[in-house]
Length: 199
Image (cartoon, rainbow, N blue to C red; front, side, top):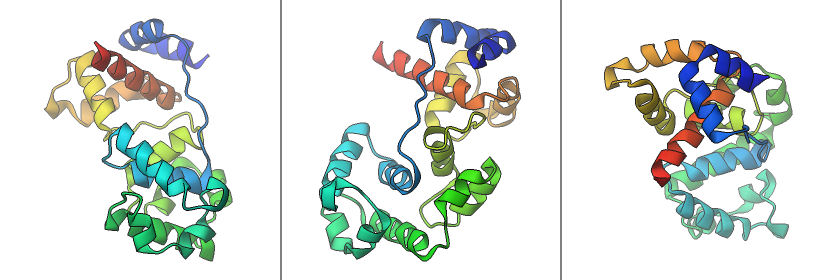
């Protein structure tokens, strides 16, 4: 239904949907682990992220990352995985807010998107983009449009012949046609740009 609606509202996106096939936007890890992943992956290649993530998991009993155990790790422990001092600080800050109850991830799941963004961006090291990724890939919210994402911008420049000056206003106009399925449209833009990079 979402892809049909998107195809009807945007002929250019319809061509991408036909080219890529069914949407495979799957629910990722939830809660604390998802936010840890989002912080760790900031400004890293996929390869570097996976290497650090593997070393990070090895610090936890059973390989399960949790806030209580993370709080017990030193900055040196975290940095031994390849994390920067700043990211180690961010992870400790996030764990402290979870452990104190200042952030309740179960309550967050019940909030609307903007309330989730407002709540989580209070955590040092978590910006709007990080929360948008959390909303899309962890909470599976259907109508998220991460306009500041480099992949989204690159795909829109290519697909809609947008110039730098067309952001954000023209991009928002185009994305309005995708409501209430902007997350699905964004997934197709990611898939589209990945296809272009492979060529």
